[in-house]
Image 1 (cartoon, protein in one colour):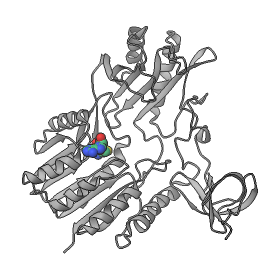
Image 2 (cartoon, protein in one colour):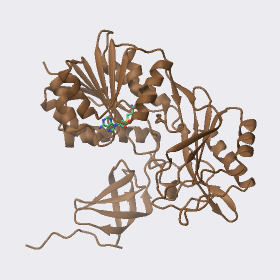
Image 3 (cartoon, protein in one colour):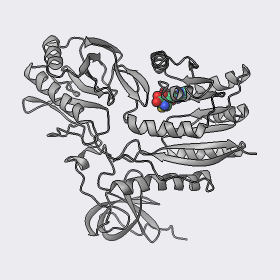
Image 4 (cartoon, protein in one colour):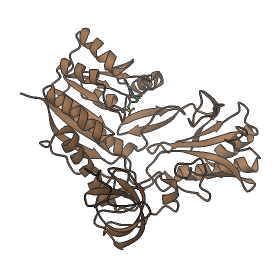
Length: 459
Ligand code: SAH
């Protein structure tokens, strides 16, 4: 029998109707059941498309002309939306973005987890889904005789010229990047040249605490020496009183990793502070910190609600990071145990507990999948287990240990619906039932989906 051929050919122009969309924002249309992925096409649209890549089971196309425009199509406010690629959903109404994220959770649950009984609530969005990011890290280069800053063009290391704002970044951070760039240029500080591995200033990082308005500037340099550092620092903090900390981070390596090992305080404090709800966090140059605290608060309030604490419980938080969820839960639990693999994050978690006078939490450095069975052997028997793993989800032996520990409830915070669905299936087979799921939009305009699930022991 002849092998089935894809119904389209490369470079062919076709008319396509779009039915679906991926979380990367690619529209999906089918030709005799063969799916084509087309960036920037929306469900409900009909368009002329050029086929650019044909694989056995799917292909890719390029949007040439939209013949029928979706009512959810909006004009992206960013001037460099297409070049940058940092956002994927700016061409879609916010209402549709929230709907899309909920549908992604529903479809992962169904297809991967075979879980259809648990309600997936409407995505909790932001009232104003712009300018929310509290941190920006932007590369510096030298072009046409001056310093420029801007994100890299999609899949390249070439800075987009003329990019003076990022519409999902806090406005103050945009202004600070611009100020540093201008002052550094005037002082003749050279930009890092990646190809030659020469020059000084690699990246400018700015973080601002939304609740406190405190700003930290991090100058990432290739060299230990930063020429004119004194002048730069003085001018910066005298011009912008909200700057509380200016640090230099030295990264001598030829690498895509932004931060190097060594950090020196050039002026001011080592930390800035921010609040999530009524919990205060100290943030250093290298600390992990959630980029969208107001939405983080909504997510963790849900986690707290799903944990259903009455004050007498012991709770384990696996993948606890800097202790954000753990500190939220501690106020309503008897005791909280957090485990996290990165020692610096645990140091921050302990510092944050101290800062908030919370003394019923213990934080441990280690792999969650190893520490949990050890806790079990020590006789620790939690009432609730909370997990907040990275994109790849939980390790099998951690899921096994959770089931062995037999808590009343499990709260699973996830940044990837696919691994969430996979893991919930395992927990369901181990005697738990998924009760409900709540997507929360932590990253508007992008395809990222955050979600919290509540599980209870089956009767
Ligand atoms: N909620 C946390 C962040 C969770 S992100 C906060 O707000 O700080 C996931 C965390 O899991 C990261 O901090 C990562 O370092 C940690 N991690 C990754 N693999 C791990 C493992 N095997 N054991 C424990 N922690 C791990």
